Structures are given as structure tokens and as C-alpha cells.
Length: 227
Picture 1 (cartoon, rainbow, N blue to C red):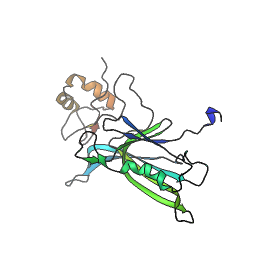
Picture 2: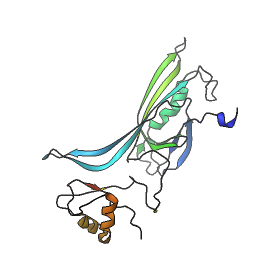
Picture 3: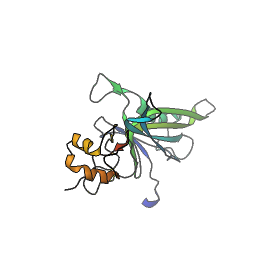
Picture 4: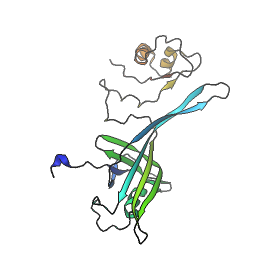
């Protein structure tokens, strides 16, 4: 088979607490048909008003469905496997708590990296659902689907890493500052030691009137300021 005709298979890889790969990898047997990515912010309803308030970092979630089958030609180089659970248990590993790398008195599920071509998602397994779909006449499960729901504690648009041309961090990677009643952009900048940069911050955030901010307005105070 020509190298260009080979199917690129997705992989599940274990991540250590420092974000490095441990070496434990699970190539999927069949690539998923779809990847469902969702984004959510942490919001809180104010008791005295009808407005909502941003209270913390958001989350990004990924949902994928993987199929395993020990009856067909795609056997993932395991021709002696007679029970599909011998394959799915390799995935169940990622939701099984174990002693933490940095504190052996705590147990946590391992970190996980889903990698497929240029698509990468790092997080933890929030939930796992296994469905046994087909059985042999002896009662052994031969085919199964595993639905994985992964999450990470940040909003991240899942593309190849993009670096800011001015040397700053990629958009969306810094927490936003929230304006309170009566705040001006000059006051907020001064409180962060950036009093001289308020005009650049205003321009980067598209703020026309820096003295008239909406209560609850979110502002990126960490924009690249240049020289």
C-alpha cells in the first residue's frame, strides 16, 4: 500500500500532571464519524437583578464515539482477542482514578490527549458510556461502542496553535477583567499598573468611550501593547 493511502488513525494518549505524555497510548480501531465540541462560560444569576454575571473561566468539551469489533478485518493487530471488552478496557483506563503524580495521597483520573491529524484536545474524561452491541453464540460480546465526554477548564478553539504576531499569547488564553459600576478603563488600567496604556487597551477592545463602561463588561487587559 502506498504511504499516501494509509488511514491516519486517531489516538488516545495519557498525560501526566505536568502536561507531558506518559507513553501510554491507545490507537482507535475505527476513526470517529463526528467530533462534537461545545463551549460554556461559568455564569451566575444575580439575586437582586435579572442580569447574569461572568464568574470564572469557561470550559471546552469534546464528545466522541468509538467503535470496537473483533469479528471483522480491522482487528488493530490483536487477532487472538475473542471478547471486545479486552479492547474497550484500554479506553476505560482513562476514567479510572489512580494516585496523582504530584500527591500520592490523592487519586485522580489521568489526563487524556485525543489526537487525530491536526486536531488535538487535552483534558480529562468526564464520563464514559460503553454499549455492547453484538454477542457470539457463547455469550461473548464481540462489538461495542464507547462514548467519551472529555472536558478542559478553558475556552479553546481547537485548531493548530496560533501565536500572536506581536509575541503575545493566542486570543482567548487570558482571563478577562470585569467592569464594575462606575469603573472607567483608566481606573482599571491603573489598578493593574498599566495607567499609561489605557488608550491601547481601549483600541484593542473596540471601546469608544473608556469613561462609560457597562457593569459586567468583559475586557482583555492583557493585549499586546507593543513598544
